[in-house]
Amino acid sequence: MRSAGGFTLLLVLVGVSVLLSARFGAVSLDTAEVFAVLTGGGSETSRFIVWELRLPRAILGVLVGGGLALAGAVFQALLRNPLAEPYILGISGGAAAGAVLVLALGLASAMSWFLPAAAFAGALLAIALVFGVAISADRRLDVRVLLLSGVVVGAFFSACIALILALAQAEVVRSAVLWMMGSLAGATWRTVGVVAAYTIPSCLLLLTLARALNLMSIGEETASYLGTEVERVKRVAYGVASLVAAAGVAFAGVIGFVGLVIPHGVRLVMGSDHRTLLPLSFLAGGAFLTLADLLARVVLAPTEIPIGVITAFVGVPFFLLLLRRSLRA
Amino acid sequence: MTFETRELAVRYGAEGPWALEGISMAVPAGEIYAVLGPNGSGKSTLMKALLGTVPATRGEALVGGRSVALWPRRELARSVGAVSQSESTAFPLSVRKLVEMGRYPHLGPLSPMGPGDQRAVDDALRRCRVEELADRAVDTLSGGEFQRVRIARALAQEPCALVLDEPTASLDIRHEMGILQLLRESAREGVTVVLVTHHLNLAARFAHRALLLDGGRMAAQGPVQEVFRPEVLEPVYQWPLSVGVDPVTGAPTVTPLDEEG
Image (cartoon, each protein chain N blue to C red):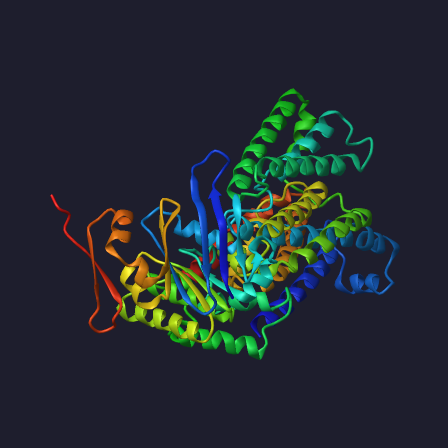
């Protein structure tokens, strides 16, 4: 079966990208050394590099990239809009405002968890605001209003960020800009644990909505005639997918593009049935972000390029190629 | 499966005009029931209220004797198939996948299609004469083909009632007659059919009963012979009409006359 083949292929790709991430970097280890470390041997330095630096980073990449891609696919179905992505409803704006505020107040270095906590709080605030506006008088969630209020709330947070940056010192501006372009550099096993605790159960829950999302993408009225509790599905899908995006953005900054393009890429190759689209988007997004992070570390080593630059540089041509191929077919 | 409304009234928003007011209708099981009326008379709103996608502001709508608001959607979708006036797919989808969605109410969120589900889909495709389109992308279909595919999806639900809003609006004679004969066949098998239509002559020929709406209120309800009288129809449609009898089918026929200067 085609989807089983795609699933296996992408699973292998995720494994390979994690191994490649462990193998390459500022210090290049040879393959034998990496396998020695993974099976419990290797030198102490190699063990530290692989276990404490590279593996948590690679796995955080899989979780964040996978979560963003899956959340993007959910938002596209929910809003019936191919331009939708996980940040479209103001989540990135809220998270960035929280992060920039903490950076500007000089609190980021005081406690390592301050920055992600502030970003996460900002994202939750944005989610709550957008939801509060979009829920109408008769307690129905109008997705068009959701989209509009998301964009407006995002714009408001952008203005907050601009104000804070205008008053901040040059160093703060630089670290804020770097944060907003995304990075997996802060990965530790603890952050991996926190992100996994949010991402994995949320993604499993979203997978159970696959059929409902198939129906939602042909329209709410018809979805309801085919047995969907439309209002419940909208709330759960919006809330849970937002939570996934918020967890990702809190620990890895704003990484654009993955949530928009990966679902489209998978859809072009495998079709739009969400029962295959959602899991394959997770795997493809995870592999893609891990490999993008590897490139970000290696290309100009020891300088790291912002990961968002890589996701766009690699993703755009790849996506255009897929799009052309599908148009020709 | 029966449909019934009691003093049903619907308004959109707290201040808006009433889209429906004082509708008390009853659709007996196994009959074809036509909902007629000019543009904006509330036909589609009535369909949505019957199916619970628009809440009743006053009164109630009952499906199978139970208030439609109390039906879990999945259970309702196993009993009632509905085809709304229009829909559009946000992403490319094959005809077969779209018709398979008719089986969703019978499946768990993760359980795969069984042989029985496959058979229901194949039957529905065949009965609506769209088997040869099964592998086409939905967005490449003509309006009439898409309409037949959507009806096939409703049949794949294996419902005991069908509610259709202008199902033959974009079909040519052959496919229009095909669909109406299919509905008649279904009714003979015991399926209740509610048919919202502009097409008076088809309603007269195929329906057992009709409800005539005028500005959200009931202008007439009853057996087709009673509703299809010029003195009932003319004031509603605001046009001179003559009602005759078709020499072949014996059904009432409505002919619009020239407006008298």
